[in-house]
View (cartoon, rainbow, N blue to C red):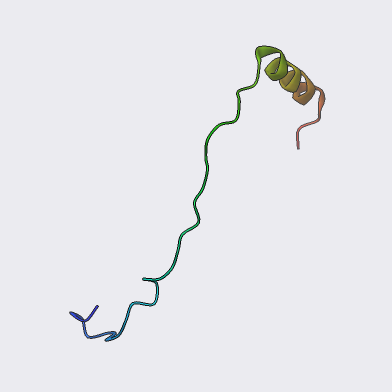
Length: 47
């Protein structure tokens, strides 16, 4: 940023620690579970 002469100081985010995210899949639905969910959704009114 000093190139543009907007800010001449320490960047405040250099010590920021980003949280670690675990996006790992625990398990997949079985075919029976998926069919059950779909059947249940079909019985509900759509908004």
